[in-house]
Image 1 (tube, rainbow, N blue to C red):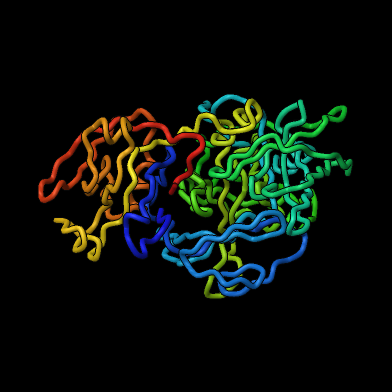
Image 2 (cartoon, helix red, strand yellow):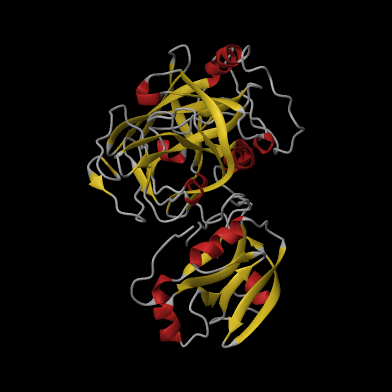
Amino acid sequence: MHRGHMPGSFHEEATLLEGKHMQDKDNSQAFEAAAAQRAGDSDQAPETSSQTVNGKEQSPPTLARRSGGRWRTGALVIGALGLLLALAVGIFGGIQIGRNSTSGTGTVRSQPNVSTQPEQVAASFMPSVVQINVVTQKGEGLGSGTIIDRRGYIVTNYHVVEGAKQIQVELYDGLLLPGQLTGVDPPDDLAVVKITPPPQMAVATIGDSSQLKVAEYVMAIGSPLGITQTVTSGIVSAVGRNVPEGPGMVIVDAIQTDAAINPGNSGGALVDLQGDLIGVPTLTIINPTFEAPASGIGFAIPSNRVKFIVPQLIESGKVTNTGRAALGVSAVTVDQRVAAQENLSVDQGALIVSVTPNGPAASAGLRTSDVIVQLGNTPVTSLSTLSDALLNENPGAIVPVTVYRSSQKMTVNVRLGELPADSQVGD
């Protein structure tokens, strides 16, 4: 994923390379260089123009984010689909659903009968879905959330509550309660809000997103355009997508669905026919040619990432263990200009401009001025492809890294580290 260009001196544009532990199984370069929009969360319909929101034109691959009643933009090209589309972010605010539970390795699930169960699943699940109303310095906004813990914890998108001065939660029965922000995880676009639990409060269960199958039936539940308790349905269109949401923000291993997702669903629940949360709808796509949402293309944060992050936010108010692999270098994209400027023997790759002392790369013998051309089985032609390659790896994994040192090509084995919790992809 491309996270920045390199105007001027490439040393000034050095970027710390790190990644999440999952990768787009279909195409590691499937989402680059277009404009993504995250629906910021307002109960008013946004104005649209070519790759714009609220009248602000966005030109790929520039990323702009908004909180509360604002839209956000990111960069995204779906190469596998052969279309240049602009990601429309986040959908008015978000819901996430799940139970404060352990990690998502599960058994293979049986598939319920689609013709008999959706209405029962929706009726059972909807009481755990809430609407989140926020007040920020920019104005008012709304989104969705889901009660995931009997102590009153609600999971939602970070961009729903970003900059919130006041949070109000509307329950299924219309009861309004004040909400307190428990913790946030901007890189994963996740947040937790707490309410004082009322009697007989419904609590949702988080399922195992690793067991999802393409074409499996799913439902999205949320408050599109402020219309509470709305259910739409569709299928899982693809799994394992890597979708950039903004600077340092990537939905890794995202679920693609054709269930309708509109402003207000942001962070909304993607529910399977087991009645479990298996994804958090966060992004839809806008076709820049027609300046309108592309039908049937949306993305959700996988529930297993929710299960990994949310307990940390509840426990300490922040992420203490990112689960993302880090190489421990800062680097820039090599192109013909950089190659000529630095007298390099190759004209593509990722040029190391600094190495973290005692970090993974340093311990393996990598140096400043080495040009990385491959990590594991993935060719590295730029900074973004190196970042994408890291998304496929786990902290602690030993991976071969091929570099050019002057004119000499060499391969070293690197034991990857873990991205610090206070860092973001692209820092």
